[in-house]
Image (tube, rainbow, N blue to C red; front, side):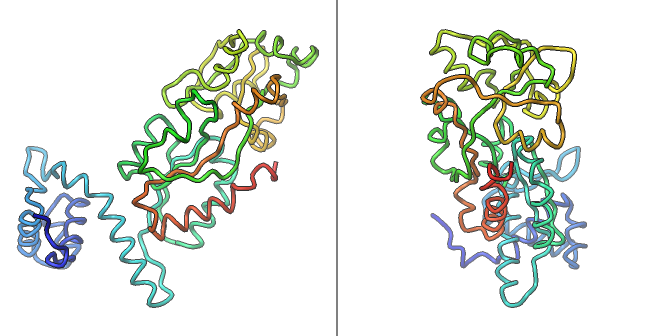
Length: 322
């Protein structure tokens, strides 16, 4: 039978969070300014409520059960929400706010200084952790380890990164769309040739791995044309591929979103940008919707709502800032 929340002393949840943080009854008691016996009694009530031991003694010390671990992020979010609700009685800003973001690089680097300043202006004591977007980022959002992801998806109907393939319990909002373009060194011999698809596939290329996949929409489009890229080097991020492309002494080119021009102007001024030489119908299949992604459980979370709006205010018109 489902238990009524009204029968649970919510102060016990504060004790539970401290036990998860400290993994020690005595340390949790010290933080709560109570005796260890009081914490032990609270733990007994929690064990009865959840019908789980929650913590067990091991040779390595006090260890949480899988159920306790699964509640850790939800407890942190609940306490932050509680603080924010109480703060509505006055002008107090809740302490201890934590933000966990997963963002594509170099998309992160273009505006993150401004975003971090906004975060610390709103929440002076905030702690911010940034993860690079990778194959595990969606799962990290589902597990509650990441508050918001911000990355490019794909438009090609056969893409594994299509927005339509996101799980039903994941929410998203497209902030802007971008078209991938070709980056090459200013001294590259291709700049002395007619720029067409034959020239594009003629030269060796630097590719990136996206969510465990070495191919993406561009490769599908080329297959439709009976062509294939000559990939000599595969790297983890656009940032890495642009860095290598900017180095002299080789003829490799790379493909990355157009917004990277903004990044390259500051970091790699020797790079030149050219369009992918395909017709407009095929270009439409290459469009990249840059998308905010979060779990539905955070729809009404004030912290996450504020963060979404802060990111939108900086990135939604990125194309106009290049």
